[in-house]
Length: 255
Image 1: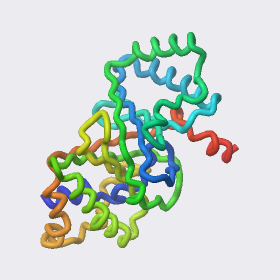
Image 2: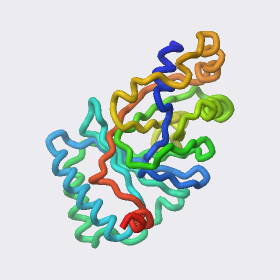
Image 3: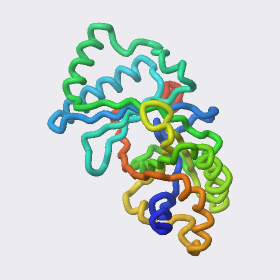
Image 4: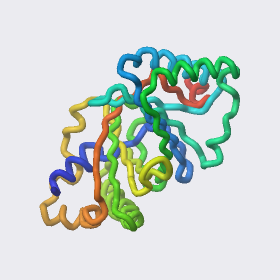
Protein backbone atom coordinates (compact mmCIF):
# COMPACT_ATOMS: atom_id res chain seq x y z
CA UNK A 1 0.00 0.00 0.00
CA UNK A 2 2.73 2.45 0.97
CA UNK A 3 4.81 1.62 -2.12
CA UNK A 4 1.73 2.00 -4.30
CA UNK A 5 1.12 5.42 -2.80
CA UNK A 6 4.67 6.49 -3.53
CA UNK A 7 4.30 5.41 -7.16
CA UNK A 8 0.80 6.82 -7.55
CA UNK A 9 1.01 10.10 -5.71
CA UNK A 10 4.69 10.95 -5.70
CA UNK A 11 6.22 9.93 -9.01
CA UNK A 12 9.17 11.68 -10.58
CA UNK A 13 8.20 15.35 -10.58
CA UNK A 14 5.35 14.99 -8.14
CA UNK A 15 2.53 17.26 -9.10
CA UNK A 16 4.84 19.26 -11.32
CA UNK A 17 3.59 22.59 -12.50
CA UNK A 18 0.28 22.22 -14.17
CA UNK A 19 -0.44 23.91 -17.46
CA UNK A 20 -4.19 23.44 -17.18
CA UNK A 21 -4.85 26.36 -19.48
CA UNK A 22 -1.44 27.21 -20.87
CA UNK A 23 2.13 26.95 -19.55
CA UNK A 24 1.64 30.18 -17.63
CA UNK A 25 -0.35 30.41 -14.43
CA UNK A 26 -1.98 33.49 -12.95
CA UNK A 27 -0.49 34.49 -9.61
CA UNK A 28 -3.96 35.21 -8.24
CA UNK A 29 -5.65 34.03 -5.07
CA UNK A 30 -7.25 30.66 -5.76
CA UNK A 31 -8.31 31.14 -9.39
CA UNK A 32 -11.01 28.90 -10.80
CA UNK A 33 -10.86 26.52 -13.74
CA UNK A 34 -13.87 25.65 -15.84
CA UNK A 35 -13.33 22.28 -17.51
CA UNK A 36 -15.52 20.86 -20.27
CA UNK A 37 -15.02 17.11 -20.57
CA UNK A 38 -16.30 16.06 -23.98
CA UNK A 39 -16.66 12.51 -25.25
CA UNK A 40 -16.61 12.67 -29.04
CA UNK A 41 -18.22 10.04 -31.25
CA UNK A 42 -15.31 7.77 -32.26
CA UNK A 43 -15.99 8.18 -35.98
CA UNK A 44 -16.36 11.98 -35.76
CA UNK A 45 -13.10 12.99 -34.08
CA UNK A 46 -11.72 14.52 -37.28
CA UNK A 47 -14.79 16.71 -37.75
CA UNK A 48 -14.74 17.71 -34.07
CA UNK A 49 -11.06 18.64 -34.41
CA UNK A 50 -11.71 20.83 -37.46
CA UNK A 51 -14.58 22.63 -35.73
CA UNK A 52 -12.48 23.25 -32.61
CA UNK A 53 -9.66 24.57 -34.81
CA UNK A 54 -12.17 26.97 -36.36
CA UNK A 55 -13.26 28.03 -32.87
CA UNK A 56 -9.65 28.47 -31.77
CA UNK A 57 -8.93 30.81 -34.71
CA UNK A 58 -12.11 32.81 -34.05
CA UNK A 59 -11.23 33.16 -30.36
CA UNK A 60 -7.75 34.45 -31.15
CA UNK A 61 -9.11 36.90 -33.73
CA UNK A 62 -11.63 38.33 -31.24
CA UNK A 63 -9.19 38.57 -28.32
CA UNK A 64 -10.69 35.91 -26.05
CA UNK A 65 -9.02 34.73 -22.86
CA UNK A 66 -6.70 31.72 -22.87
CA UNK A 67 -8.07 28.26 -23.52
CA UNK A 68 -6.27 24.93 -23.20
CA UNK A 69 -7.33 21.75 -24.97
CA UNK A 70 -6.18 18.32 -23.80
CA UNK A 71 -6.88 14.83 -25.13
CA UNK A 72 -6.86 11.62 -23.14
CA UNK A 73 -3.79 9.58 -24.10
CA UNK A 74 -4.78 6.11 -22.98
CA UNK A 75 -8.06 4.27 -23.23
CA UNK A 76 -10.74 6.81 -24.18
CA UNK A 77 -8.64 8.80 -26.67
CA UNK A 78 -11.85 10.33 -28.08
CA UNK A 79 -12.31 12.33 -24.84
CA UNK A 80 -11.17 15.96 -24.79
CA UNK A 81 -10.78 18.36 -21.83
CA UNK A 82 -11.27 22.04 -22.69
CA UNK A 83 -10.08 24.37 -19.93
CA UNK A 84 -10.54 28.07 -19.22
CA UNK A 85 -9.34 30.04 -16.19
CA UNK A 86 -11.52 32.55 -14.31
CA UNK A 87 -10.93 34.97 -11.44
CA UNK A 88 -14.26 34.19 -9.77
CA UNK A 89 -17.66 32.63 -10.39
CA UNK A 90 -19.14 35.92 -11.60
CA UNK A 91 -16.68 35.98 -14.49
CA UNK A 92 -18.24 32.79 -15.90
CA UNK A 93 -21.06 34.98 -17.24
CA UNK A 94 -18.73 37.58 -18.75
CA UNK A 95 -18.77 36.57 -22.41
CA UNK A 96 -16.75 39.57 -23.61
CA UNK A 97 -16.54 40.06 -27.37
CA UNK A 98 -18.74 37.62 -29.32
CA UNK A 99 -16.71 34.91 -31.03
CA UNK A 100 -19.13 34.64 -33.97
CA UNK A 101 -22.23 36.31 -35.31
CA UNK A 102 -25.48 34.85 -33.98
CA UNK A 103 -26.39 32.82 -37.08
CA UNK A 104 -22.83 31.58 -37.56
CA UNK A 105 -22.68 30.55 -33.90
CA UNK A 106 -25.96 28.61 -34.21
CA UNK A 107 -24.63 26.70 -37.23
CA UNK A 108 -21.31 25.94 -35.53
CA UNK A 109 -23.07 24.79 -32.36
CA UNK A 110 -25.38 22.45 -34.27
CA UNK A 111 -22.44 20.90 -36.10
CA UNK A 112 -20.31 20.43 -32.98
CA UNK A 113 -23.20 18.94 -31.01
CA UNK A 114 -23.67 16.36 -33.75
CA UNK A 115 -20.11 15.08 -33.14
CA UNK A 116 -20.51 14.65 -29.36
CA UNK A 117 -21.72 11.66 -27.35
CA UNK A 118 -21.58 13.30 -23.90
CA UNK A 119 -20.54 16.53 -22.21
CA UNK A 120 -19.64 17.29 -18.59
CA UNK A 121 -18.86 20.67 -17.02
CA UNK A 122 -16.63 20.79 -13.92
CA UNK A 123 -15.37 23.77 -11.92
CA UNK A 124 -12.10 23.48 -9.99
CA UNK A 125 -10.61 25.80 -7.36
CA UNK A 126 -6.82 26.03 -7.51
CA UNK A 127 -4.78 26.37 -4.32
CA UNK A 128 -2.48 29.20 -5.38
CA UNK A 129 -0.60 29.21 -2.05
CA UNK A 130 0.46 25.58 -2.54
CA UNK A 131 2.01 26.16 -5.94
CA UNK A 132 5.73 25.75 -6.61
CA UNK A 133 6.62 27.26 -10.01
CA UNK A 134 8.16 25.06 -12.69
CA UNK A 135 11.88 25.25 -13.34
CA UNK A 136 11.12 26.33 -16.90
CA UNK A 137 7.96 27.80 -18.41
CA UNK A 138 7.27 25.98 -21.67
CA UNK A 139 4.44 24.36 -23.54
CA UNK A 140 3.37 21.16 -21.80
CA UNK A 141 3.22 17.83 -23.61
CA UNK A 142 1.78 15.26 -21.21
CA UNK A 143 -0.22 15.87 -18.06
CA UNK A 144 -0.78 13.31 -15.32
CA UNK A 145 -3.92 14.09 -13.34
CA UNK A 146 -4.37 12.45 -9.95
CA UNK A 147 -7.87 12.43 -8.49
CA UNK A 148 -8.09 11.80 -4.74
CA UNK A 149 -11.52 11.75 -3.07
CA UNK A 150 -11.55 12.12 0.70
CA UNK A 151 -14.10 10.92 3.24
CA UNK A 152 -16.89 13.20 4.42
CA UNK A 153 -15.60 15.77 6.89
CA UNK A 154 -11.96 15.28 5.81
CA UNK A 155 -11.45 18.20 3.41
CA UNK A 156 -9.75 20.26 6.12
CA UNK A 157 -7.55 17.35 7.16
CA UNK A 158 -6.40 16.85 3.58
CA UNK A 159 -5.76 20.58 3.11
CA UNK A 160 -3.70 20.65 6.31
CA UNK A 161 -1.67 17.61 5.21
CA UNK A 162 -0.94 19.21 1.85
CA UNK A 163 0.06 22.60 3.27
CA UNK A 164 1.86 21.46 6.43
CA UNK A 165 3.56 18.23 5.35
CA UNK A 166 3.56 17.45 1.64
CA UNK A 167 4.31 20.85 0.13
CA UNK A 168 7.08 21.77 2.63
CA UNK A 169 8.69 18.37 2.05
CA UNK A 170 8.59 18.85 -1.71
CA UNK A 171 10.13 22.29 -1.39
CA UNK A 172 12.87 20.87 0.80
CA UNK A 173 13.48 18.24 -1.90
CA UNK A 174 13.85 21.03 -4.51
CA UNK A 175 10.91 19.78 -6.53
CA UNK A 176 9.88 22.29 -9.19
CA UNK A 177 6.31 22.99 -10.13
CA UNK A 178 3.41 21.99 -7.90
CA UNK A 179 -0.28 22.76 -8.24
CA UNK A 180 -3.32 21.39 -6.43
CA UNK A 181 -7.02 21.97 -6.92
CA UNK A 182 -10.37 20.74 -5.68
CA UNK A 183 -13.68 20.27 -7.50
CA UNK A 184 -16.26 22.84 -6.42
CA UNK A 185 -19.12 22.31 -8.91
CA UNK A 186 -20.04 19.60 -11.40
CA UNK A 187 -18.54 16.74 -9.43
CA UNK A 188 -17.72 15.52 -5.94
CA UNK A 189 -16.54 18.55 -3.90
CA UNK A 190 -14.45 16.19 -1.78
CA UNK A 191 -12.25 15.36 -4.78
CA UNK A 192 -8.76 16.90 -4.90
CA UNK A 193 -6.88 17.03 -8.20
CA UNK A 194 -3.12 17.32 -8.61
CA UNK A 195 -1.22 17.46 -11.87
CA UNK A 196 2.25 16.65 -13.19
CA UNK A 197 3.68 17.85 -16.49
CA UNK A 198 5.99 15.56 -18.44
CA UNK A 199 7.80 15.74 -21.76
CA UNK A 200 7.97 11.98 -22.38
CA UNK A 201 6.27 8.90 -20.98
CA UNK A 202 9.33 7.37 -19.31
CA UNK A 203 9.65 10.37 -16.98
CA UNK A 204 6.58 9.02 -15.19
CA UNK A 205 8.53 5.90 -14.19
CA UNK A 206 11.34 7.73 -12.40
CA UNK A 207 11.53 7.36 -8.58
CA UNK A 208 9.87 10.10 -6.59
CA UNK A 209 11.48 12.36 -3.98
CA UNK A 210 10.36 10.11 -1.13
CA UNK A 211 11.39 6.78 -2.67
CA UNK A 212 14.14 6.27 -0.06
CA UNK A 213 11.79 6.51 2.92
CA UNK A 214 11.71 3.51 5.23
CA UNK A 215 8.38 1.80 5.82
CA UNK A 216 8.18 3.43 9.24
CA UNK A 217 8.91 6.90 7.85
CA UNK A 218 6.40 6.40 5.07
CA UNK A 219 3.76 5.19 7.51
CA UNK A 220 4.16 8.33 9.61
CA UNK A 221 4.32 10.69 6.64
CA UNK A 222 1.21 9.32 4.94
CA UNK A 223 -0.86 8.78 8.09
CA UNK A 224 -3.27 11.65 7.44
CA UNK A 225 -3.43 10.82 3.73
CA UNK A 226 -4.39 7.21 4.45
CA UNK A 227 -6.96 8.41 6.96
CA UNK A 228 -8.59 10.75 4.42
CA UNK A 229 -8.53 9.15 0.99
CA UNK A 230 -11.36 6.79 0.03
CA UNK A 231 -10.93 6.73 -3.76
CA UNK A 232 -8.03 7.35 -6.15
CA UNK A 233 -7.56 7.33 -9.90
CA UNK A 234 -5.07 8.70 -12.40
CA UNK A 235 -5.50 10.06 -15.91
CA UNK A 236 -2.94 11.04 -18.56
CA UNK A 237 -3.75 13.85 -20.99
CA UNK A 238 -1.86 15.09 -24.03
CA UNK A 239 -1.75 18.83 -24.74
CA UNK A 240 -3.22 19.87 -28.11
CA UNK A 241 -1.46 23.10 -29.12
CA UNK A 242 -3.29 23.31 -32.46
CA UNK A 243 -6.60 23.79 -30.63
CA UNK A 244 -5.30 25.85 -27.68
CA UNK A 245 -4.31 29.48 -27.36
CA UNK A 246 -2.84 31.87 -24.81
CA UNK A 247 -4.30 35.11 -23.50
CA UNK A 248 -4.14 38.12 -25.86
CA UNK A 249 -1.37 39.80 -23.84
CA UNK A 250 0.74 36.62 -23.99
CA UNK A 251 0.19 36.27 -27.73
CA UNK A 252 1.20 39.91 -28.23
CA UNK A 253 4.42 39.39 -26.29
CA UNK A 254 5.47 36.59 -28.66
CA UNK A 255 4.83 38.54 -31.86
